[in-house]
Image 1: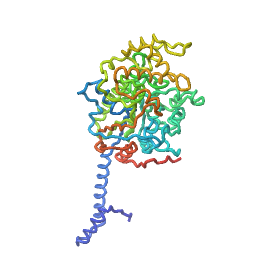
Image 2 (image 1 turned 180 degrees about the vertical axis):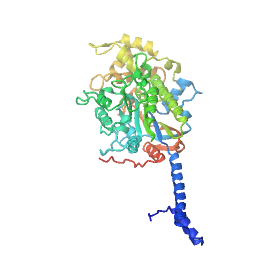
Image 3 (image 1 turned 30 degrees about the vertical axis):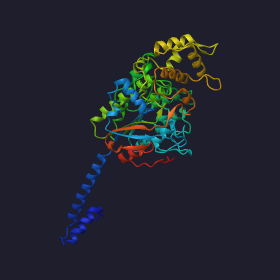
Image 4 (image 1 turned 45 degrees about the vertical axis):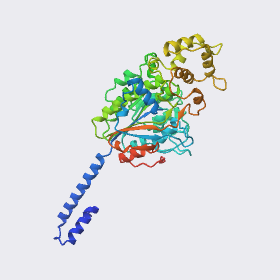
Length: 487
């Protein structure tokens, strides 16, 4: 006879019956009892699985602390308004420090969140000792679930790369693109096209090679939204960072919004019956904060919040999805100061970077912006009156300590600081930013919001390394902190 294995409950039940002096059961009766026990066990297993989220959507507002959220709420809705993320029923706080600094950069912060292990600033997906680490995205992929990343930064920058790659230096975006190409993640949407092209890839065009493998490769908003039944996607919509929301019209951009990229990503990933993991990043909140660009913080954060609202609506009709919204760190100590001139800030047009690149006149012979152009542009676009002395200070600040011109976005940081100061915004000074190795990040705790299946477990104060441990546990997937990838 075939050996019959008993569950512990079945064995105890049979023993009890025999001890009680019940009549001896036939073999068929015993097997029928075991089948019933196994059916109960299967039902219990099914019930347990139904309590586990099949889909996890993690949304990261880069640099989005409580100050960014509050400033956005006030500028968008007024003091009695509320953001969609604030309506999520469960919330917590999260610490963000890195292995070698109490103030993290985005690489170490992303690695802490994605892999559950601290690392040094500047390092992605690797331990301080140089060992490669698994991420939660790779964990889902190993369990035959679709995975994807969406960002309005380069798709190879620190936060998405922490989930998708392993490099010692976050600056190696060409290597990150190569690793993403080799892993064939299902959805990759954002900026950074240059890193996938022959000049950065030893003559290889990784975009064309993925297209040959069946990927859709849209290059602008129209192409993205025209795709029917998207399967695998590599959408790169800018050579570098995607355009600030405040600059879309000024630069005549045809890039998709974060909401649109997310909609298409979810349409694609949700076709997998096994489930999926998606990381969606509102990246330019951080960039605007670095530039002390309060109007930019507002516009980038409200776009992120609208995307949160869309994701919440998408998940509301499902009972198999967990949505977690958080930040990786805070940038520039943004606060909703009493002196903040809300109306003036609402009326600012364009980003400081746009002024530097498109509006200020640079005198090559003098090596500085002309006083007249700076004064007229700042008055017209930002409502700021700058004296001749202010312009002279700005022209000094756009050079680094070696006498070299800073990058345009860093010149924009200096312009933004003038605007923030003029309109009474609460934010770190340019001097504090200049002395910071992270360009003005802070060690402030950041919020975590959760909704959906298992969301009630997000309650209290966490370290950034705790989040994916909780997600893996809720999803029923094995995961050890800092687990080393096996070759």
